[in-house]
Structure formats: structure tokens, C-alpha cells
Image 1 (cartoon, rainbow, N blue to C red):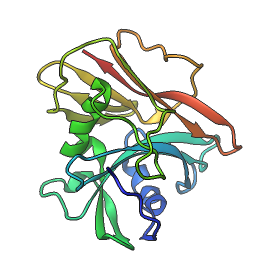
Image 2 (tube, rainbow, N blue to C red):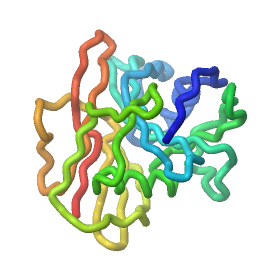
Image 3 (cartoon, helix red, strand yellow):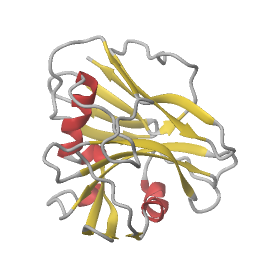
Length: 214
């Protein structure tokens, strides 16, 4: 179970993302520097209790219209050798000390827990409260059998594509769009992950976060 500590983090996650977002091919650059604001998200537990896993949703108001982004992050107590390309930044946690924040799509622990979420072997957890499932997050899958965990991530202007030599493909929507209530339409998909976030005007919306093709 992930423990949520009430403490300070320096620099903040939003400050790290403001510097990191413009380097992503899916970032919809505005005329000004990014101004990310926390808008929603959830967590997954690492069974080993070593790695923090957070699906963070932020809105950026630097462009003509606010844009919502999905940013899966992992937090570690030591750097991962060979993963410098996926490093978002380093922070000083008031309880845990130095923390290395990575783009979760390139972290092996994240790539193990995301399939577990689609398989129903783990549940989304509240972003801010320890040991509380987040029932607002919905997951469906029509396929069966175990999913692979040997995914390779590729970023493109539309998001992040996770592919496996064994066939399944997971597509993470980095730029989020509100969708009607009910299971989002995704042609040919065998699974979907959906959740909610808050727009800058306070409106709560839902949308598709990821789709699975098997």
C-alpha cells in the first residue's frame, strides 16, 4: 500500500513538469512558458513498496485554450541506471529525502502495474489519501489471459504507444479530451481506462486515458 505523506517537496512536481513538458512531442506548445495546474489523477501500488506510481493529470493555461495532459510518474529513492532519458527531475521529499521522478511509461515497475490494472489484479488508488480505492477510475477489458509486461514506449505527437513483441499495444492519451458518459468509443480496442479531471473553470469532466488492443 502506498503511503501518502503530508509534507513538502522541493521543487514541486508542477515546477518539474513546467520545465519538462515542452520537451515532449505531444505537448501542445503555447506562446508562453507552461503553467501546469493539478487537475486530477490516481495512484497504483507497488507490491514491493519501493516505487511511487502516480497518474497525474494537469491542465496548462499557457495556450489559447487550456489543455489537459496525462503524465504518469514514478518516484524512486535512487536513480535508475540507463534511464536518464526518462528522468523528469529530482526532488527533495520532506520525509523520504531525495526522490528521482521518471516518466512512468519508461519505468519497468509502471509497465508491470499498468497491465495488472487492466487484468483486474490491482485497483486504482486515491491520489491524496492512503489505502482508499478510487472508484471514479473505470477499467474494462474483453480479452482474457495475462498481458505482457515487456512493453517498449514510443512518444509521438498523439501520445505514447506501448508495444510488446507478443502483440498487445497500449496507447496512452497524453492530451485529454472530455468524452460522453459511458465506455468511451475506441475502434477495435479490447480494453479502456477512463477517469475524471477538473477544468480551470471548476467543471468536472471525464475522458479516455488509455486503450488496449490485443
